[in-house]
Length: 210
Image 1 (cartoon, rainbow, N blue to C red):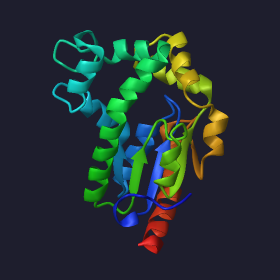
Image 2 (cartoon, rainbow, N blue to C red):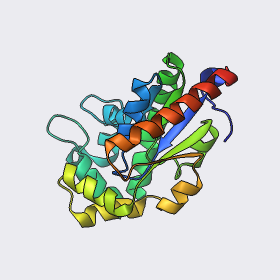
Image 3 (cartoon, rainbow, N blue to C red):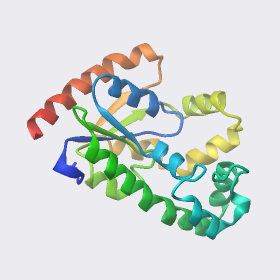
Image 4 (cartoon, rainbow, N blue to C red):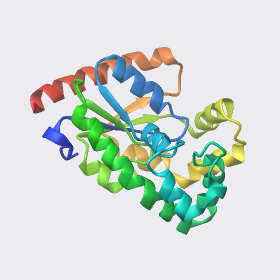
């Protein structure tokens, strides 16, 4: 992968994986070992929370019907819309994606960790991310594991989970784009040795690129 386009061209990792793969768990483990983690999903939640920067444009484009009583974007209603209306999906992305990029770059400029980890659920789908990070790390598990995990933590039915998965690239496409892979089919104890090994490598690469 080419070098990062972020400030000072710091060594960076793009962390991705399908829904329910365990991206957040791996990101938290890397953060505990000294990386600076910037989660684009969390940024998107902030932007679409009450008084978030994206809310005025969302209201203008979609109306108050797509906002909750406290003024946040109604994520369930918006998810249902964009799954069935490609035009709505494009309009929402045109609002949120530029703001995510600005916030991501701002956090990257302030980062103090040994290296940067950008958590990007749709990294493979978004071609420009490949040019913005030094390496791509995929957290991988079987589709059956994804479905089971998502259903256990949410109120989504299996059909809804599989619809979300179908809207993402396939497991095979994600693995083909990876520089590094973490197998997260087992329990948390199996993750630590894999994370330790990659963290040591990333620290070394970050030092060499400094």
